[in-house]
Length: 245
Image (tube, rainbow, N blue to C red; front, side, top):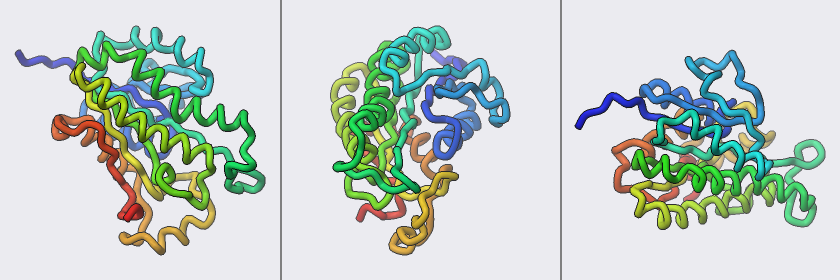
C-alpha cells in the first residue's frame, strides 16, 4: 500500500562541514531532518523547519543524552528512517599539537569517547523501536584515522573512531533481525573550516591529488540510507580518494 509519509533523518553534528552538507542533501531529497547539537539552532542555516526540528543536547553528557531520547521520540511519528551519528570531537594540545597516548589527559579521553562512541550507542539503542518500525538505517561517521596513526588526529579521537567502526559491525549483527541496516563511512581529508595546517602535504600523496568535499561524503551517507543500499549492512565505506590503499 502506497504512503506519502515523509521520511525522517536524525543527525548529530549538523552545524558545519559534513553534517551541514548531509542536512542539505537529505532536505533536497524531501526528507524531514531532526538535528542534535549542544548549540542552539542557528537561524542562518539554509533549511526550512530547522528550529522546530532541533534538539539541544550535550553528547558528552551521558545522562543528558539518555534523557534526550524521550524528547526525540516526541518529534517522531513512531518511525525513524535514518540515524546518522556524525558528531565528533578531537582535542588538540598547545598551538594545535596532536595529543598522543602518553599526553592525553584521562578526562579528555572520557570526553572524546562519550561524544564519538557512547552517544551513538545511546541514540541507536534508545531509538531502536522507531528504527525497526521504519526498517531504517544507521550510518556511523568514522575516519581514516581509525585505521592508522594520523599526523593530526589525536590518540583519543583515532581510537574512538576505531571503536565506532567495530561498533558498526556489532550493531549490524544485533539490529539486522529488526530489519535495520548499520553501516559506516570513513572520510579522509575533507575540505572544511577546521583543516589542520599541513594538510596540503598529505594531499600531495593522495592518488586523486585533491581534498574531498563535504558533499561527496554526504552523497555516500545518502546512498547507505537509501534503498539502493538495501542489502548492504556491516560495511565501512572509505571516502578518501584512495588514501587508505
